[in-house]
Structures are given as C-alpha cells and as structure tokens.
Length: 428
Ligand code: DLL
Image (tube, rainbow, N blue to C red; front, side, top):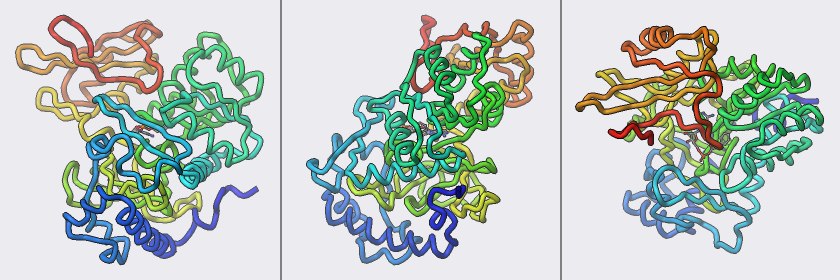
C-alpha cells in the first residue's frame, strides 16, 4: 500500500502548491469578507478587500488577528456560517476567563479528519491498525480530532480517553494496540506505569504525541521507554484542532505543515515584520479551507522557524517548521539570562536516571527572581548533578531538588511546568 494518504497533494510541486494557495486565499478572503461583519470592518479599516488579493504574498496586506479578538467575539461572532449549520464545537479555555470556541460545519469536520488522517498515515498507521486515543473526549479538541482522523484513515479505534493508566495498559495488551496517541505528558505517564508494572507492549510501534513542549531528549526517552517511534503532532483550537497544522514524518526533520489547507508566516514576535527562513519568530496561520471560522493571519503565540521548503526525503513537499520552542510569553528571564522551559527539559532529560517529570518554580526574593527546578529521579541522581547540567545549559545555576519517581503531582490533560511561588509558599 502507498505510504501516502493523499499522495498527489502531499507531494505536489512548489508551483502547484503556490497556485492552489493563491486560488484558495482569494476564495477564503472573499468568503470571510462577505459573510462576517466584524472581519469585513477590520479589512476595511486596513484598506484592503478581496480584490486586493492576487497572490499568496498578498496575505501580508490583511489584518492580523489574535486570541483576544476571538475572545472578544465569544461565542461565535466571527463565524461565517449560521449556527444552524454547526455540527460540532470545541473550545480552549486557556488561563484567562473567556474561552475560545471553534464551531465546525460538516465540511470543516471533513477537513479536520483529512488533515489528521494524513498525520496517522505519515506516522505509519494503516487501515485496521488498533489505535488507542488517550486525550479526553470533550471540549478539548485532542480526543475527538484523533477520533475523526482515525475514522477517515480506517483504523480500529480504542477510544479510552484520559486517565486510568492501568486499564489503558491492559486494553493495549489485550487488543494489540499498534498506535497510541496523546498529550506528551500522558505518554510519559504510560511509560512510567509500564515500568512500575514491569510490563511491555510488544505490539505498540507508533506514538503520536503533542499539545505540549516536546524536546528531542524527551522524544528519545518516550521512544525508548515505550519501544516505539515517536511523532510530534501539532495543531490548535483556532486552526481547527489537532493535526490541522501537521506532524513530523519518518525523517523526523521538522513538522510538515499541510500547505494546501494553511498558509504559515513567521513574524517577529508580537510584531509585523517577517523574519527570514531559519530564524525563530512567531508563527502566524491563515486557514484556507475552513467554512465556519477560518482564521486569517492568526498570531498563534508559538515560536518556531522555517526549517526547509525543499522536498523531504519522505517525498513530501510541504514546508517544514521546527518543533515548537515555546510560547511568545513563556520566555523566562532570571538573573539577566533569557531561557525557555524547553531548554530546562532538554537538559534534564540527558541526565541518566532522571525521570520525565519536572517543575520550574519561580520565586521573587527581595525583588530578585529566583528559580528552583524540581525533578523526579532515581536515588543515584543528586541535586548537585542537576544544578551542574542546568548551569551548563543555561549559563546560570538554578537550585535543583530531586524527588523520587512519582513524587511530583500529576495533572490530567496538559502538564503545567512553570509555577510561581508566593510569599506563603503556595504554588500557582
Ligand atoms: O493542544 C491540539 C493538540 C491536541 C495537539 C493533541 C496535539 C495533540 P489547544 O488546546 O488549542 O490544542 O492548544 C494549542 O498547544 O498553540 C501550542 O502552544 C501547543 N501545542 C500543540 N501542539 C504542540 C506540539 C491542542 N506538538 C497550543 N508541540 C498550541 C508544542 C504544542 N506545543
């Protein structure tokens, strides 16, 4: 069987992709302009309309949008279709009050399933393969997106949802799960429980994980701990959910973004100036094929860079971006040093005997930011070893505290890694 779900489009030439993007951009801008008042007004304020869009590059003429705009227009005032056409919705709550809602028409659901099915195929899943879907089935898009995609890819779905890891392992063993999907920290959880139970899952070959920072050393740890090939899947509520923005392929050299469905730009964080290929910036995304709420130049808040626009050894031609470094607002500044939580993860995971759970704790001591890293590890790992590795990686030395494996709290869903400690010692 072919290694591709949709070979013609996944391997289309650069010219073909550009011409498809141009056609689709013209259409989607007209669609949004004609069917949504808020968006039309925003375009008019910028002095641009559908007739000004003649090529992909003209995307730059359009106004940028952010999460705030989506929140202000809760529940669905940015929709371009009447609510009677919605057949599903998902929502992300984030840390501040008003949630962001993404409504789906029938066509939107199909688009999502197609993107997600491509990701499964790219990871090596084939019709009939048992896939265990471990994100929650609810407002979070992870569970349902992986479900819709698995339907389209013809997989055998084991929709376990989140939690009850011992039961997950039992089902994986009894049904021969070949593909497991989840948020990164749940992959870690399964790995730990398997180790505690002294079990292995010989049928398990493929892990599709995302939704959280995923450093290369964490990828290696999960891959060897579960005996699988691990893939990094990307997507977000605003673009239509998990898998819409793509995944890495077996060459593991960047995330292929599905360019027939999305245009990506990398801009200076919070600014408007494009950064050259290879340089890190904020990813900005335009949905080309969504009906209800296509985002136009949406500031994702995620930091990445364009890795390559060349044909990949896997045969695909869609642009590759680097794994996400972190969010624009995630950068920590301690003792004059700027760093991202991902750098801490990358450094910690290189210490033999260190577990996969950690916390970065920031505390204000007399106006000076102090940082302590808590990490789970085997008894042979000391705080001094942790401090030494962090000093090499970051250029300054946070305090390192080692906890036994299982000694740090776990959350369901996305793991929180950075905490602020207040005067009374409470972590928030
Ligand atoms: O997290 C979609 C998803 C579910 C992706 C399951 C992968 C697996 P949201 O809850 O809207 O949607 O959060 C989107 O999560 O802007 C990134 O900051 C982060 N994120 C998603 N995938 C990755 C990844 C889902 N592969 C936000 N690596 C995004 C790093 C990721 N961060």
